[in-house]
Image 1 (tube, rainbow, N blue to C red):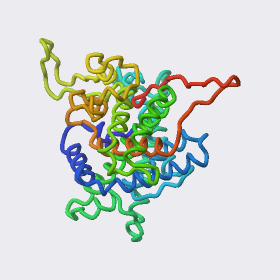
Image 2 (image 1 turned 180 degrees about the vertical axis):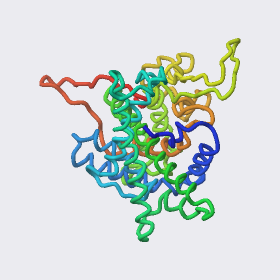
Image 3 (image 1 turned 90 degrees about the vertical axis):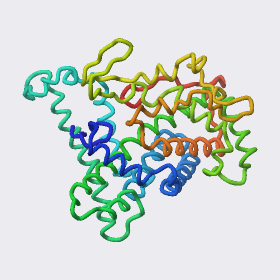
Image 4 (image 1 turned 120 degrees about the horizontal axis):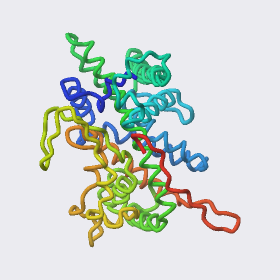
Length: 377
């Protein structure tokens, strides 16, 4: 499908290290000015969209991380409905989340099948891969080309692409241009569907656990009041909202079957020998539902992360250490994802109530907790 440039698919080596280093240079946790204003812009527009057409909330949610990621990566302002860059990106990322599930296609288990001619029965995956490759190429190339065009015309919004292209060394321009293009594509690919999943989980959790809404709104009214919207300066002063963020990531993890890892050399664990090349699939779901760390794990309970004083309890295992991946391949944008979730949750609960539909007898109609299965749940 052609995703060999994507950071989570790259083998460990210079290209992977260069891509991760470039991302961290531009989106370091201490450099909040690079991303906070963009997140605020899209969250506030989301609130306006919800106010106008609350029945379309699922579609509105998709615009927060998708629009923010494209804006951060390319400096492209995403329109409210049917933005062409978002549509192209969603087609491509939908394909990789479907195809990336281990064992989704028989060729994953028997790689020799990649040599089977397309006309042989059972080789339909080849045609599917060709189609999905075109989606990938459109996603990787179109937004980047638009960003470069705007930079050359002098009317580009500041973005990762505009800043990274300024630092290109002429002696190695081709490699560095590709590096910038690949890293920019990774920003959307890694951030969009994962954050959308987490926001969906927050919304359905509020329907099933309405007491959380009241507790959160009480904290927001006490700390912020009702004359303004939350901003990032309020994050440390709203531990209950942060506890909701942590419980969202734990209760229904975005990647329950985490990104596979491959051993680069032989290893031994508790007497078991694993040869080089062994693939491990971390069971994030089991870790985040471990009853020793999280009693009654199927219950949505933000209070589990708070101490008796109502502050975040640092003795409780932080779900970030499992929800965002592991080792040196842990998500490089944890701080951006957490900031987006916090501001979305705080802003929604500051301005709206969330309640289920009711039937003809006035009884609540609660949606089922049913998730679609792929790499991103």
